[in-house]
Image (tube, rainbow over all chains, first blue to last red; front, side, top):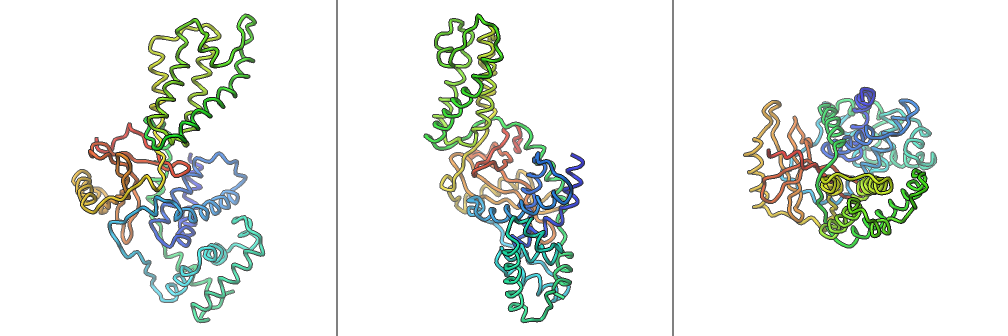
Length: 158
Length: 254
């Protein structure tokens, strides 16, 4: 269990940020994070190394994020309190960029987040998301195009 | 530039790391066996339960034949063994199956109890048949313990969206008021404000979420079921296929 705890602590931030980028809601992101790590703790998969675990966690996070909205439980949930949970950043550049990404369709957000925040290569993303590299490439390209439109060309997308 | 600002923005986001402890606590709780059945629906559960009992019997039967090397004991099918057995002490198998049928009729749609049922029934079937063929006597209280293992260990609630109905605002207010009077407005140690949400109600209980408000966002503490009388409240976990389960040993209202 100590080893599992070490892994959870190590990847906690990364998974939370990915889940947040996918769900756009802190509460749902926490639900996803909880579900992902519970699955990991219970999993008897024979992981080869930390990279293998990371890839597994990313894939499960994407899947959980997609399925969370499909659940009848979430459709049925009636929040008693509506609160503005928008994240406030200290500079407008961060805010512009972050919320531009959040406005992208979910499939582009995953690729953009992994490429620009996790510094993953197209090949790594394709392995992690079990997608064809050319699909990743086209989603990345389409995501960038949409971002350029949203940000009115104000940022360089290298 | 985009990369730099996107990274910086994400670096500014700090997740609630208290969640790590909550995850491990939840994982530990999920390791404990649940203990009562709440099920909805009828025919599907009966069919699945019956199929699983037959499948379990078919699986263990060859193994039982192999393990019993005493030539004087003739292999027999499950039903024949029960019907023709002259030793009345071995009726536990029949009893278990009868209880399963009753339970299934009373509260079916228990597709997701299947693995637990299958395992339990397999174990019971193996134990009973082994006892039968080896001529062991089963203690007088055996039926009770078998019944407990078979029925009370299961605590799975099959929920489809149509099983949940909305709760009106007056009811929500009444439940929320009760929960706040019972648990307080906020956490005494952390000072975080509690939020109770009622997602809906099923046949005889409400389904809700208990959260607290940390800094600028709400964070889930647990999801719960609360009976209509508001005397029992349990944390539940999701299982597969939109089912939930809870352990009746941990009543949050006690």
